[in-house]
Length: 229
Ligand code: PEP
Image (cartoon, rainbow, N blue to C red; front, side, top):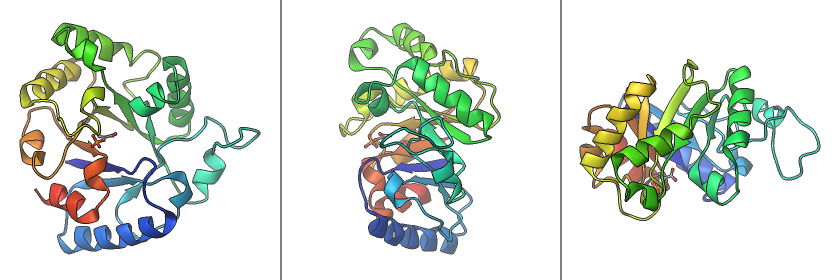
């Protein structure tokens, strides 16, 4: 199973280091065989002594240059970071990243051999139109994306379930992952209010290969409770 923690705009450089010390100890002591990823904010990226994969939540598709406020591969290379989240709904919705920009980022980081956790997800009004509309919406988010890329992991994150405390139902996750699996033969993560209380039922669903976790990952005890479930 894959367990990925997305800190978003939470944690500092200091608290990220403390978090990783705690989580690393637990992962090592438990001889954990799952793949564990942590995506801290850009200011907390660093080299860490840990088997946990550290990834970037975002970067601009450039090595360096005049892109005020952004980071490129030069800043990621400094810490040996080769994993990135692309297409998160918060970047699509709040930061207005179009499918074209998302696809451009994907192509850039793919070209440089990055492992990519590529996020897709539908808004509530699409979910309310039923399964067919959901799949059509999700497949459109693969436009311009090479779904055969060997280092691709897909995260299905219904927007209405992110940070709301309301996870998708087992039936919704099962039917969506089953349909996605027919188009994309890559690991499929579920994300959206996954937490210790529902992790067992989520990872027990067919075609779910792991979870991408926001809120419940911010505390290493809570995140490890999910990993050890
Ligand atoms: C996310 O934004 O990737 C996410 C899954 O958030 P949460 O777990 O808080 O719903």
